[in-house]
Amino acid sequence: MGNAKSGAVSKELLQDLKLNTKFTEAEIAQWYGNFQKQCPTGRISPAEFEAIYSKFFPESDAKTYAQHVFRSFDTNDDGTLDFKEYIVALHMTSSGKTALKLEWAFSLFDVDKNGYITKAEVREICQAIFKLIPRDKQAELPSDENTPEKRADKLWSFFEKGENERIAEGEFIKGVTENKDALRLIQYEPVM
Ligand SMILES: [Ca+2]
Ligand SMILES: [Ca+2]
Image 1 (cartoon, rainbow, N blue to C red):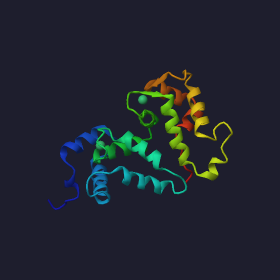
Image 2 (cartoon, helix red, strand yellow):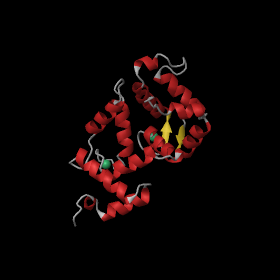
Image 3 (cartoon, rainbow, N blue to C red):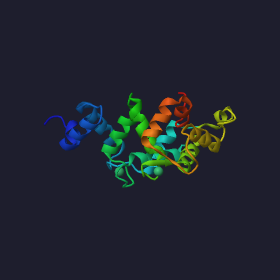
Image 4 (cartoon, rainbow, N blue to C red):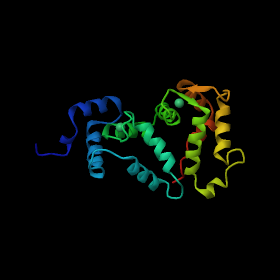
């Protein structure tokens, strides 16, 4: 038992994570070490999560977006992210597989977690995404995308739904897969 580093993750959790993510045992053990260092309580609070996001978006307001991302990762709804939720989050967002990322994008837009996206939810997430865009970049946006409302209207129109209809997960994934503009509008990635 000379190596205490890998003894930290329980066998059960390790098996579960190996089965449900692309990560190897060694990688999970390493992530666990990092996680414990940064987060001695074993849980990430919404405020800690917002602080991490703010570092990635120094020129804009990432708070609202971070809150939505946090909600989408907090699968057991207990208001904190544990190691398992953290690893699954890493797995989904860093995956090369578009389908997995789009599944996650759906959960981001499904604010009330009822399995459908409404126009109000699209508006809410478009607001949060818009705040991620630095002000000088906002000014350069095309005229039909330069407010959160316009972006929500444009995105919604791609799904060919009435104002009071809703989008199921399959429809959402199909829609953004088939339409480059829709795929672009559901995210904002800063140019690093
Ligand atoms: Ca949780
Ligand atoms: Ca919903």
